[in-house]
Image 1 (tube, rainbow, N blue to C red):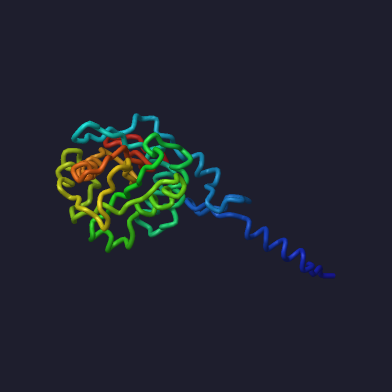
Image 2 (image 1 turned 135 degrees about the vertical axis):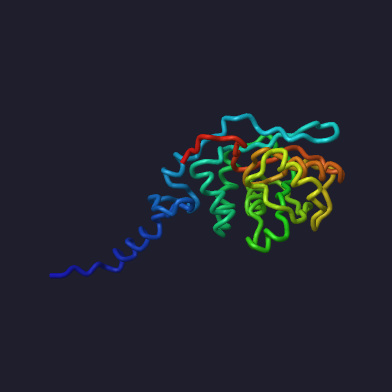
Length: 234
């Protein structure tokens, strides 16, 4: 004799399937969770905290330098998140990155600060269709209760990937321009990006903003990728 489940049983089973979440980073089933953006246990275990000092970014003027803070090393699931956001069209991962950054805390994101997403050059925007730094900065601003400003733009230059420190600095020299909004004055500005290596791009952006009357207080990225590494953590 076959058993026909009742309507309430069917509803319960469907609810269970809906509640069974998929990890937003690796795509594997992550168990029954209340938070749809929660990482699975495997991806959480592969978030490697950045034990290195924050990257110092030189600045002209009174500040002298700012710090680029990154909660995680560019390895494991944090690297997977950046690659998915940057090269695989997974814009929703920007929200995940913002949540991880907000949870980690920051000394740069002070009360009343304004987040400034690092811009992409026009050709990269055309290829990608979006700016990954903006996908992080907008939800991060909401989580931190901060403002946000589209006051930076960027001219076309070759990608920074694969360049040495001296080449990186030369490649970004003079690359930034005023964006769609004027540079905010009277509030600390915090640059936001996905990953930092030498800090040369952040340095050039901070120099432009400072020269335009802005007060750059720091920078936030999800990951830190040391320029010279022989160990790759998967």
